[in-house]
Length: 473
Image (cartoon, rainbow, N blue to C red; front, side, top):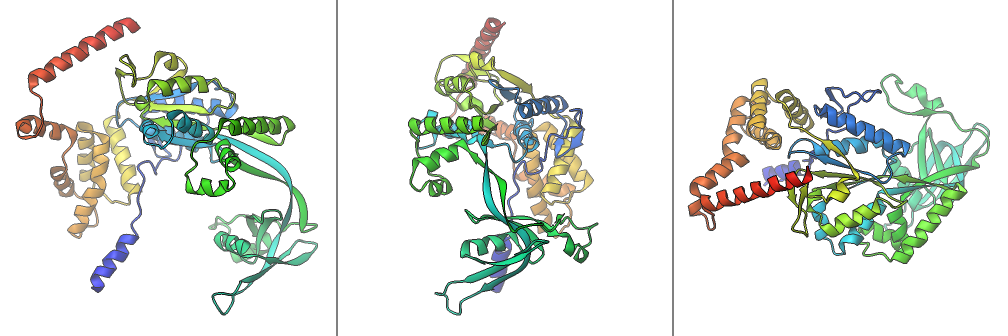
């Protein structure tokens, strides 16, 4: 029983590693020239350079009314490129990511879901003058009740170079101080209106307690003058958040729960008027963010028409779309178009093409992913994984990393060996081998189509595509 409990405890410590957690940026230098391997990005130099130029245009506000399409085969790093662009834009730039298929599974209309996604991608930086307490923490004293029913009482002593004072604090502020890890010697700022606590850094008077060369602690000067002062405070909020807060009596709870429902157009118009008024008065700045739509070919003609119109709006984010389809049918119509996107919308898009990775690029990516997933891998095993990635797909090879590690640990190994990779390669088949298996044993499955029907359909598709290409030319 004790062994079982220890196994359960080990399982609870497992952390999930995201597919693109290793991406930290586009890996460009100051002249927008791509480094071969940098910030988690490998290869795709032309696409990364184009994306870097787009990021610079976004920061300069010179790309209004246009969008970007990242187009390429599956497994060529389209989503990774979009994630890298979001990192380059910084935390202050709103970035919303959705999938084209999401719009058809939400409990609201397609246009409402798209409107909310667009307004989540537009930030408002509100500036206001507020009363704040700013000083170095001398002491935090919290009196805990003997019984659970009692109320905690807290006091905090702050000082500047000219004065010091003691203040009573409530439960909310006690929790904030605890979450931020505020201790004696920290310099903090407290907003008097809302009680929000901001940790500014560590006082220079305490710098002798730390090794400055090895510590990443931010040291600041102890504030001077009065403890209470008037300062400009900046708040960042999306227009969608403002819509929700003003639509319901308990709007903050709605935001927390995520169940916002449909919002009336009248509310949105009032919010737009107020935001534009604040901008004219210099009280706020509008920060156009990025709306990333993956699997764009899953959208239908109605949604494409909506996006076409939305790009012309004054309050419009930067639209980045990704698609791995070639010439295919536009959903909701019988017409075909490149990437499944109508021609009139394609004319508005700057298209970034991604190309299949080469051998060395795949090897670098697999090595980075192995480090990200904390897997030590032998050079021979890495070579085999790279060959598998070239012959099958990069995604399949990446999935074999963690499974090979599990096989290695089962035999009490500390490093993934060649035989571990061979073992998982035999256990989990790729798409090509799965397709071959279906062809050999298709008559034993419940439904199948004979080869003559398949060949006829393929011939019809080729004829249709050739006609379409001639029309486009």
